[in-house]
Each structure stands twice: as structure tokens, then as C-alpha cells.
Image (cartoon, rainbow, N blue to C red; front, side):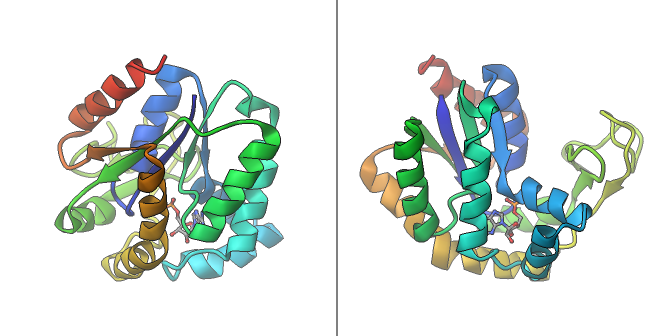
Length: 216
Ligand code: AMP
């Protein structure tokens, strides 16, 4: 299965991606995670991406497209993948389409997580991420067993610099202007399933799993 997951900041893409890739044994590819790793390692890519990400803005298309091209050529994508956070612009969508044709890996489905804007603020401000392994928590909805410490690896949990209400506003604007046209494009192709991502993690996962079960 070759999947995309889309949705605004705080819609639960990361959380659902982890559950999907675990159950269906497909590789989770998150451009956001790739950029954050590069920032942590202080690579040239990281230094460039950091300037945009910390302002809540999108990293330039050519950079995002380049890392996706490299990633999709890796061997672990052969048995299926789930792309999270890409494409975020029409230019990225068109590049992905030609890339997939080239590597002969067509897209099967796009999962679109739909959440009302009022739910996003509390989700974003309460989100905590493991500095070491990237596991995602929420201080109210899915807290770690020991506050501030990752259940999986014992790493320190941090609040992402772009997870503030101010940055959320910019991120939502970028989403509205640049990413919604991508969704319209995919809707017209008839390959999108809209999932109500307002309820609990368990309920959203159940809705997604029900759709995917029918595909395998
Ligand atoms: P995410 O973890 O998906 O919320 O992404 C965090 C940030 O990384 C975004 O707000 C963007 O600044 C950047 N980013 C991630 N994916 C892309 C992409 N496909 N194109 C441009 N910027 C991206």
C-alpha cells in the first residue's frame, strides 16, 4: 500500500501514521521528522530548514522535493509507504506524481484528517515530542507515564518551537493558501478518504483502520 496522510497542523498525522505503519508494516516517511533530524544534527539542510520551520513557514519546494526524491529511492519503501506532510503545495504534488511514475509506485489512497480549527490550539500547545526518538505525546490526551520522559526510550520530552498559537496561525494560513489546493486536486482524482479526526485517538484510528482493512 502506498499512502499519503494529510491534514492541518495538530490534526494527528504523526500519531495516526505511527499506528498505520505499525499495523500494516509500511514505511512511515515524515518530511517534518526528516527536517527535525537534520536540524538536530546541524547539517546544511537542517540550518536552512530551521529558519522556515521556526517561523511556521513552509520550507522551499525544491528542498522538500529533493529530500522526498532521495527518500523514495531507498529500499525500505519497496513494500509500501505512508508519506506524512508531503506534498504541501501543488508544485510538490506534481513532482511526486512524476516521481511515482518513474519509480513505478502509484498512490493507492490519501487519508485526509479533518478537524475543526478550534480543536487545533489545545492539541498543538499540549503536544510534547521525544527529543531522542520522536515519539509524540499530549500532556492531557496521551501523557507519558513519567512527566517529561519518553515511555519508549527514556529521552527528554520537549515542546516544539513551532507548536505555539502564534506559529499555528502562520501554519494554518500556509495550509489554507498552499495545501488546500493540493487536497482539491486529489479530491478531483477521487483518491481521498476524509476522516473526522475530532474524536479520541482510538476512534480516529478505528475509522482509518476500517478503510485500510478493506484494501489488504
Ligand atoms: P510537520 O511535522 O509535518 O508538522 O512539519 C513541520 C514543519 O516542517 C512544517 O511546518 C514546515 O515548516 C516543514 N515541512 C514539513 N514538510 C514540508 C513540506 N512538504 N514542504 C515544506 N515544508 C515542510
